[in-house]
Image (cartoon, rainbow, N blue to C red; front, side):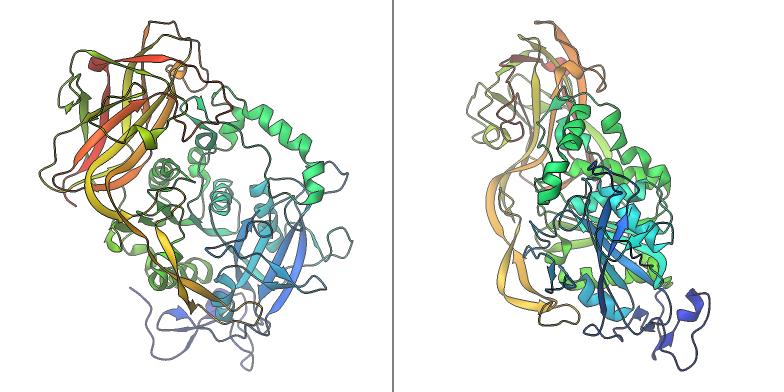
Length: 595
């Protein structure tokens, strides 16, 4: 139940070690169960602390320092919690739909904080701290995002040193901080929050990862198939771009190019570390995200469930989009209550409400208790006639690799034969059918070469109006109007372009994808050369999904070789002809009885 009062309720004394003097302002106030904007944004303290990470990754002989730009109320007599975004994007890419960078006054004082977190939450008694990952913007060191964020958490809890300047000796203390931290951010910033939680660091009370990565192996590899290495972060500052070359070269060497899962990737597998998580989780993921594949959400979410982590998620049918740009008012209210609960200790009941807010079709949302929903696994077998049936079918079909074509071309014109892919379609469904979870594909295949890449695509064939997520579209579009979220100044207004759904009509909707290297059929830890003509069986996951197949539509499995949409064209192509033995090839999909 939410905490409801008709008058302003002072609760700071319940949360801090000593009650303030009667004449002093409270640390925060509640009205109708949520913290109120009673502190001045204009007069807020704006400053930077350079926090030691305990590392010297750029090998300059000095301990690396990350820049933490801080905005906090000036009136508070008590210690306050922190909302923190750790990002490499604050200078060169910017944050949010409008790609806002950090801005500074001529003396270096931070003046413009991207996104709405500062505008909305600072007047409510929070501090907002935006941290430049090592080697980016004003930080020294190299890219170690979790270490960068954890260093600032340690400083906020009195366990690390910080300084007034990048290289000077004057120390600065976080004597205004309560030690409670919430990490939030999208994409790389969300991945950092997930990694920080997986480290089990003390003081991190909650994370809000938006389209965050939970296992970096799947960013660069698909079940043993190496996509390519993007190299060092392109957002390094000029100093780090030179000093961090050895660090990045070492990372690339340890990652490898053979598709093997190894110790480097195990260190970046946060799914396997959910047992260490002590923070609550409020996540968001789009099921048509081409930047961060939804496989980053499904297995991680289920691991959090097994670990008993308090959690909530917003799931949608757009691409790489912040929920702030999907249902702005409700998302801000929910985020507000979430931070109040986990950082201020307000018993508002947000953690007992339905854990899932999910969009099944454009702007049609529902609340659900769990994800994935209760479902049964339905196994379908392809046939030589191009169908998907309930029983194994004899025969074989072949595809010849064409590395110039990818999944977006494979799914077109399904009735027309094409040498580089095969299409197997189920019968038209009689009623709306929800497929939700993480599908798997089992293939029994023979290659005429010592190696072979495989691509698998799950497709919904049938006319529908959907969010437009065909690259580079994201499923939303900007309006010319703006809405304001919190207080503002001339340099940081807190006002943002409004957005609406970007819709399109299509008869072909890719709903899940997966890739594999057949040489990794035994283990992801070690691939092996194939014996041409010998059959191998391999099972691998497709991306997590939540999709409603409308009545009259057909669900199809498309199989191919190298996917030009995913693999670096500079990589050598195996050039294989792959023959699938249909009796040993199947699709397993999680089907929910009711929508």
